[in-house]
Image (cartoon, rainbow, N blue to C red; front, side, top):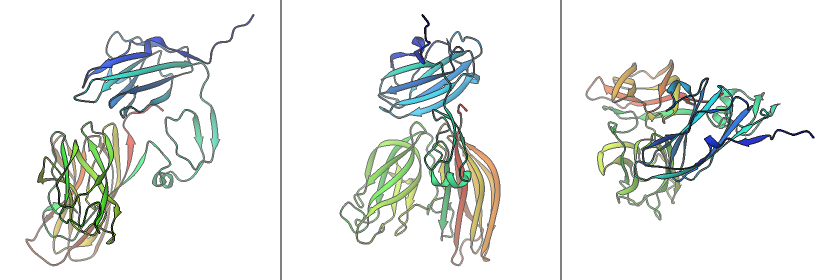
Length: 379
């Protein structure tokens, strides 16, 4: 009587239920996986976690080594993580980090070995693609940049950092003031300068905010405005990457300046929408953790009585000027090719430094084109 090897088999040493204290990491033993074609990992926890997959050529006797890291992913609280991994070493080890600084968590981890390889296919697609999708897919479809703009590629994202200003002043372009860079995550507040911007007003009612939270992860939050009332949003963060009015009253636009700042201190300004603009036009972007921003080029259009524009990469509290441009009274069109990488946790912003103390009307438009990529992945 012949026996059939099961297609999937649970790997006990990489499976289990564990309690993890706040801001703490745990890891499994280093387990042999070489006899499988693939192995799959499923995990779910009560708090935000980071899951890290290590593969080794020889068994590790303790904590995993950073050079053996093949995959890392932040996972939101109460959401299910699932990926399949090709065999890149004889042994595998999993580490899970509780990203919550206050609360303990409980994680459920299940790892299975698979005896058959991924299904392979070639096709034309009009749906989202994950570079770690559970099939080995050869894709014949549209131009990559076109599909990037359309949002087809889940793990890659088109980034346009837009800054527009008609002010002749020292500022982060489009902010109407200088940016504040908190050294640690701080509580986020929001307010408008007009009472028409509220849930029943003629101005802006709701604003969608994309921000970087205390763990360095990009999040989306909908703010329900209450006019000039200062709102404590109840969570902390490092930066705001964009604001956009999503619901408005009869005027179909925000009537006041909507400002987002920290610790109830307006001078600690992160982002804002100026009156009637409906969207922030601030040349500032913080790269989420576990991501890289590949910057392609910078487009500058405008005129001024005389000012300098500085393109700055800010990392670990240090500003690195990677480009300086002088704008004068002629209507200028500049394209500056960068092809550089900005790491997770760093920021890219544009600072205006006027050459003259006063002058005629100015108008400057800046657009920085880039692509947000995974920092670590398993291909």
